[in-house]
Image (cartoon, rainbow, N blue to C red; front, side, top):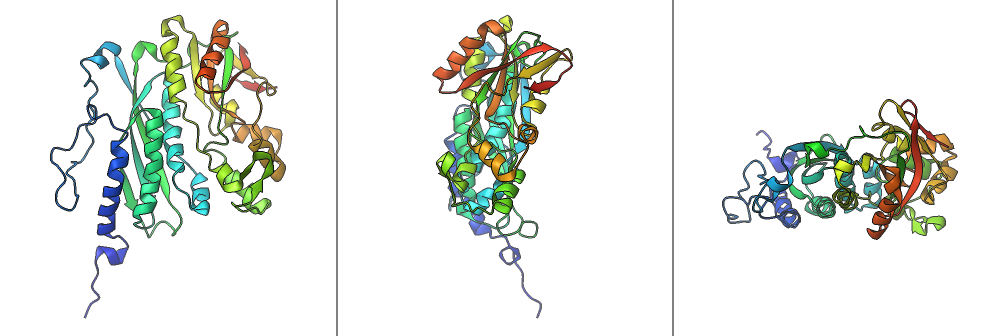
Length: 366
């Protein structure tokens, strides 16, 4: 008699999948404005199964024409990103509640570089097996990131792929949608020689450079995630899993505080892979170069520690890592100190780290 097969035997347990959906529903709901994210048309059926339809519905203007008063010519913003090989570290530590924050941060920090605001977020998770606790831990981090970014987690997809991923491997991607008024877009076009470059403190390596980090820490130095890092007063795993800082609230407050028509805020740059040099260059006009003074901010101890362990050159460190600067504001020089003061009030350390000069879209770190 031929062997009998079902989905569970093939590697996917639909009962566990339903359990996962029930576990994560409250994590989505706590990020949502019930007037903006439209509820399902029917209440949950017996067994907790909902009727959410096939796509999320988001009302742009539920609050008595507030959106229409704020936006005359709204432009939608869309971006996507992942967390990269920092996920391998999460697996090594068996801690999955922080990389969801990273996932949100990587997209929303890109999105706000336009001067806009995030509205909604979706995620894609790929796992080797059904594991309700594992999935809920990942979604919990995403939910926390969305609350910090003041956007709604409206849905996502969880793919169970036992034939593609090894037992401890997984991947995740995020998708953010936002909005900006067309004549308030900030994209660097008004940057000019004499402008000031302000650097906002990062929380660590954020979500970039982890392939190099893992090679240095676990292969070259042969450390474990439980080893102490005295200069950082932390253990290896805890230190390297520090979530990416989300800059949405401080940047939105700056945009609200300084009228766009006065062109105080000239450009924003999210410092990710490629460091300050590559990312700041993305917003420089053809006639401008940025000169950054490397001694103008304190470099967090995690970076000298990594450099020493791996015998990494200064040039490579600044090429791969953010070196303590996670976001950059280019502004009119007369307002630089005011902006730094505003950021300090929001508990964000910031420094005047350089200036714009005449040149050819280069970024020099001196």
